[in-house]
Each structure stands twice: as structure tokens, then as C-alpha cells.
Image (cartoon, rainbow, N blue to C red):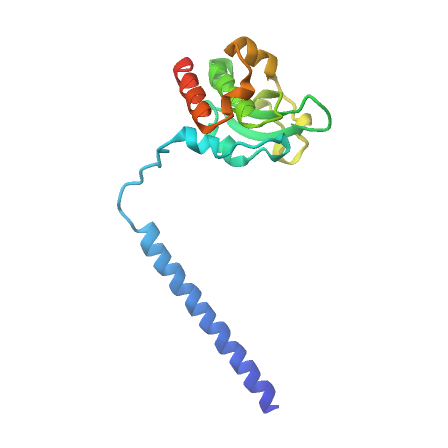
Length: 196
């Protein structure tokens, strides 16, 4: 019986010690990170072209979240989700986004989505098209995040950008835009000028 009591006492003491360590860690972390009165300045990427190029890969099935975060969305639009189209060629993906009615009705952000589509197709080797399905947030059903994306209802529009469109827009093959980091940097700078 003494052995069980000793083991129980050791376990209780270990649990108490772990609790004290966790509490001290929490308090120290809180003091360091949350009580700092310095203004919070958002990080500005020093070299956005290099950050984007670092996300380059060959397969649409590996659509990196970091690439989407770096590209972002036009002001007022929110991300719902992605649907990859990888079962047969041509390969691409559908990006579901939404906005309130006022932003949706005054939609003038097509150039920002065009620029993103160009960057997606330049950086993802087998990405042949990008579809943007735009929805009004007031038309989204309750719990839309838990239903299949292709069943998200409500009023909307779809914008489609293909490799053929890139030929017409750029006058050259988009695949050459990211062959090297230098060629991608030149392409990125060209887009910055076109989409000012």
C-alpha cells in the first residue's frame, strides 16, 4: 500500500511541477509578446518576386497555400475555398470568393484577378486555367464552409482565365515567364507596370 501511495504522490508532484512550468511559460510569453507597447507594423516583403518564385512547382495538385496568401485577393473579397480540377487535362483550379453586395455590385477588381491568374499559371507548371467563382455573401447559405464548394449557391459570376488567354494578353507563352528567377522577376515587374 505504501508503494501505491508513493507512486501516486510522485505523479501528483510531477503534475504540479508541469503545471507550474506551463504557467510560468505562459506568463513570460504574455509579458514578452502581449505587453509590448511598440506599435505593430505589418511586415513588408523585401522581395515579393523572390517570395513568389520560391513557391514555383510543376503540379496543380500541390497548390500551395503560401502562394495564395502571397497573391491575396482584391480589397473587400474573402476566400471560401479551392476546388482542384486534376482528373483530366486541361488541369486547373476553381477559386471561390465572396463579398458583400455593395462590393460585389461595384466590382472593378478584374485586373487584380487577371494578374493573379497570370502569376498562378506562370508558377504552376501544369496549370492550364484558373476559374474565379464570385459570390455575394448575402446569398451564401448558412454553414457554406461545410458543404461541397460546387454546391455553394447564391447569385454569382465566374471569370475564366486560360493559357490561350495569356497568349492573347501577353503575346507569348506564359510557361517561359518563370523558367529562371531572373525571367520571373522581369515578368513580375512587367505585371506591376501593366496592373498599376
